[in-house]
Image (cartoon, rainbow, N blue to C red; front, side, top):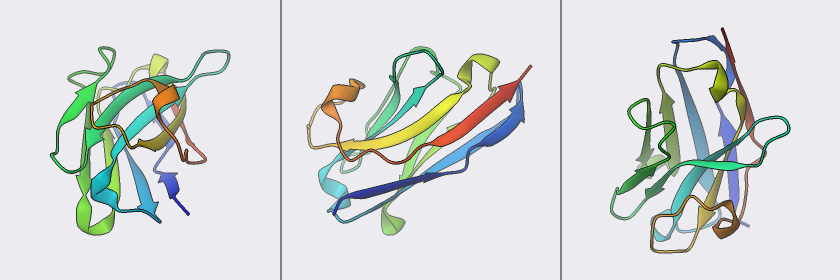
Length: 124
């Protein structure tokens, strides 16, 4: 069974930082693209960043470029999302998911095996 488990969310003041983790199991880590998404109350789920595990290529939404960094520890089958300079509008539940596609994508419809999510709240 493909399983993704997010952790690392919390409450932080604007300008602060958090690092989210996505621990993966049940599949060959290198074969997939792992993505981070977020969903704020009343809004659609949106793509934040994705990482091609086999090549290390990354892709970011414009709203987080220069502030968020996605990375992985392949020995631990874990993907991280380092979030700096957080803003109140970054408040959301953050999810990770995987896609077998070979091209970077932030379309939630391309992803499967979603984690349960972790809450990030940024206070002003």
